[in-house]
Image 1 (cartoon, rainbow, N blue to C red):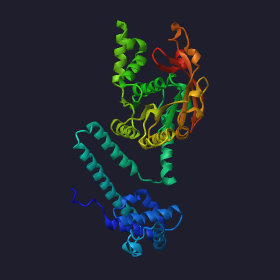
Image 2: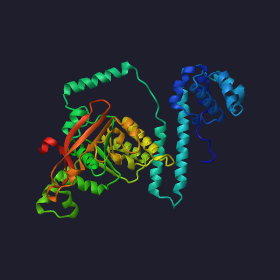
Image 3: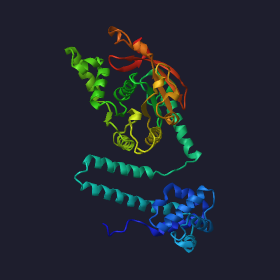
Image 4: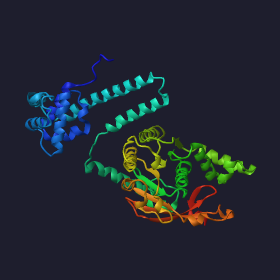
Length: 441
């Protein structure tokens, strides 16, 4: 293997550069596919970097300007000299095939990357000190990272988009469905949002112990158990077993305290088994991984979307995701995570609902967008931001009253494509679940 020359296509690299020097508009196509490191030849890599520099400066790339740019960077000799740059346009008859040339160069670059990744994993596999599970995760991370980096940009004309838009409107007209998105099960919220929409990032914020996880689990139970919509729940704080026990309690309407302590009555088992059966049949997928890295989350989400056709993802919670860039300040890491989740929602074309804490100084008051913890970029990236709020005093009640429903505000503070406002729901502490206010009235 060491004696083999890595995949490359010198003629395609030269043809790509020649086309770029012939036609200043060809760069718009090339940058969709190629980066400087994709060129195997050191000289070609430097020429392409010079062309990109000129493009970024708003200048036309031709033989003279590229030669001058290479001189300025002190790289003309390493790039083959002025004669080599001048020869490139003569190696290609026209710039019309720029996309074909660029794809050939990209294909070789991808193959070299795959060889590098497989060689690295292969070498580590011989080291018995390496954890095999971590090696598998590392291989997946590197492969998915490669596919992420290789996503190409594209555009569509209005004539291509209009038929799809009309088709979507006609579908809504004829089906007369109440919601365009995935219903949460909370009727007043769904009336305001028309359900969770595809490609949207939805943030649910609250102070600790107000019920973020309970709300997300209530919604996930509705989508998976009631509607049979494939649903994924990423739990980074609770174990999957604890999460499932909470879900059984809510679905069977058996006090969670009884389930935790095992103090059940014989009559409880019938309700418990019926609820367990409904959950068992539900397309609900729980991912339990504390300290989950962002790349691992993205990889797992893609796998669930591809293999299980998951249509909505819940993440409990956002600030427990760890970034690969440990050296960055925490607020910059959170900014990277929120941007990545938004792009993931668009890539998978599904709603992603992520929980987040709010600042400590929001205690005792109705939270606002500025109270989102760690980073203002969460507010910027999210399509919908909701807050759970209730007065703490309502929880300081005698033991006999602690099982009673607690009215809670669900504040829609931001909705990119709809109204904002507040709806009231009720929290049932005995079952750690939320319900519509009218249902308990």
